[in-house]
Length: 151
Ligand SMILES: *[C@@H]1O[C@H](CO)[C@@H](O)[C@H](O)[C@H]1NC(C)=O
Image (cartoon, rainbow, N blue to C red; front, side):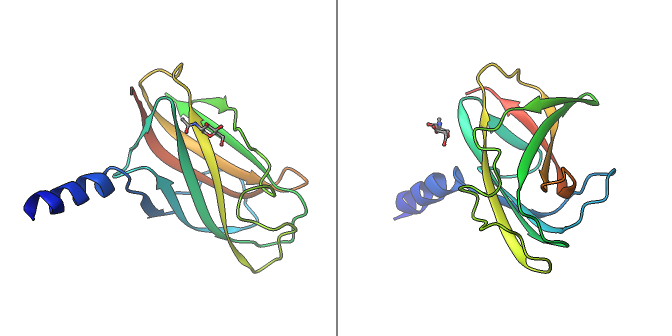
């Protein structure tokens, strides 16, 4: 019985997601209001991003304005220097849980995956994730402290 409980805790404990209030970027004036960020898998901040795996980011936000197109940009800020991450799917209107166009005042949950390359070094960084509208203005911009961990 105890073994079963432990096994359950182990299996699910390893695949836990972390939901936190948005830690928003210090610069820029996003049109939307970010509510929560969920990072999966992650047990505590800074999140350990495992090389060779996909990490899912889900951002709950309220749109402040209508938007017809959505593009994600992600940077890893390493010792103050932003380095661009390439996303497998940067199109925020596709496979993201959002049906475009965005309607002002509505709350959405945007979901996308970041592939953690095995080429990334094991270092601490801050993930800066922005969702941009058709005019490249930010809808939200969040910061998530993280560290790349080897597999
Ligand atoms: C990561 O996601 C991409 C795109 O969805 C998929 O092709 C790939 O197999 C995934 N990799 C792993 C290790 O799950």
